[in-house]
Image 1 (spheres, one colour):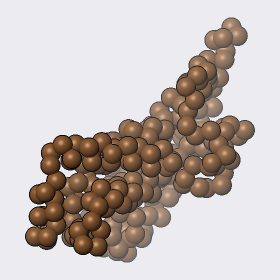
Image 2 (image 1 turned 180 degrees about the vertical axis):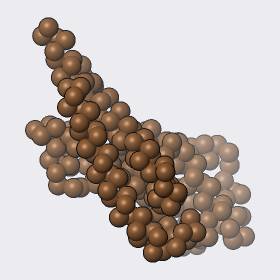
Image 3 (image 1 turned 45 degrees about the vertical axis):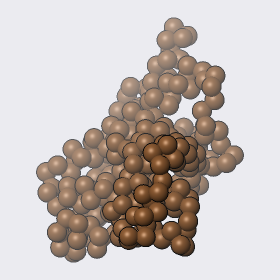
Length: 232
């Protein structure tokens, strides 16, 4: 942090910081609501992150980032931090921890059109913000979807556990490193081994999808079980 930035921050009172933090949380939640999360929750995010932790990371970057805040170019520190939050949330939304395995919604559901289009952002025509008065079936479907995706990640880790290189690549992807060169540098794995591991990972992902589909068909799914209970 430059001395100029430090001086500008020092002039901000504790009360002002509290107000800034509250505004930043509101901003982070607003942005989060327009992104697709495997957790199906705009507050509790993948990787153990929350809206609050994202705000904390943004403020930490203000003090520790290589990209210094310049009060002359951008006098409003809150606006600067909002930009950092946007970047952190988008990076998390595009991380493999969030998108590596996505369970396809049921055809005909409100989420299906957005999923089929491949969009990582919410389809404005779909009812992504959960209505207050949800039916028991809708609640169960949301819970089932989140549980399936968590289970998918567990199975993928299980599939990769006997392959140290592949496990290292998977861990790097879950940390947000997408490019083979980044993974190679982050984990100290030869770049060619990374390329080979990514191919193996694709096969592992397909194995997990098949296992999940088989288990889901065998159990009949949570919603179907609920319907049987209601009609039984």
